[in-house]
Image: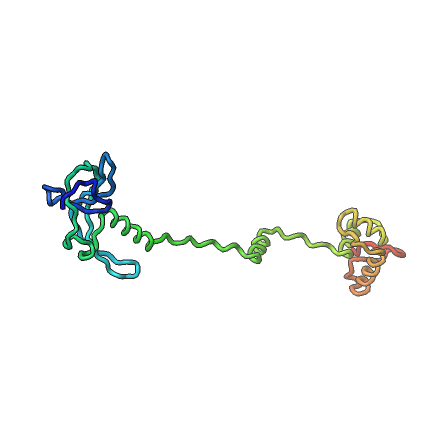
Length: 211
C-alpha cells in the first residue's frame, strides 16, 4: 500500500517507492518537513544482563535526516519485518547508550575509607610525650622548707604562711588556722626523722632550716 510520508504515524517503518532496499522509520512530521531515521544495515549484538541472563538483538546503524512530507513510501507491515516474529531490533545508538550505562553501574567507584579519629587516650599520651605536663603542686610543709632554706632568720608558722603566699609557693585553700596545721606537720617531721628532718627549732615557736 503506497502512501505519502505525512500520512504515516511516528514510529512507522517504511520503504521508499522505487528504491526497495532503502528503509527508514518516521520520527516526526510537520507540514514543512519529515524527520526520518534511515536504516544503515543490521548488526547482531549479544550481551549479558546484570543477573547473567544472555540477550541478543539486531542493531540497526541509522542516520537521522529530513525528507519532504510528500515522499511516496510503502509502510512495512508484513510478518518478515514484524518485530514480534524477529529477534529484537533496536537503533545502534540506543544500544550503545544502554550498554554503556550497564557497564558503569557494574564498575562503581570504590568508596574512600574514612579515617578514624584518634582516640582520647592516644591524644593524651601524645600530649604527655611533648613535655606539656603541669608542674607538681607543692604541699604546705614542702613550701615552708623552701622558704626557710632561703631565709637566714628564724621564722614562726604565721610568717612562713605569709612568705609562702607572697612567693606563690603555696596558698591556704581556706582553712581557719593554716599556721597551726603547718606547726603540727613540722613537729611531726622533726620527731620522726630527727637529724634528717628539714627543720630545726631555733627558739620558742620558731624554726630554721636544718643544715
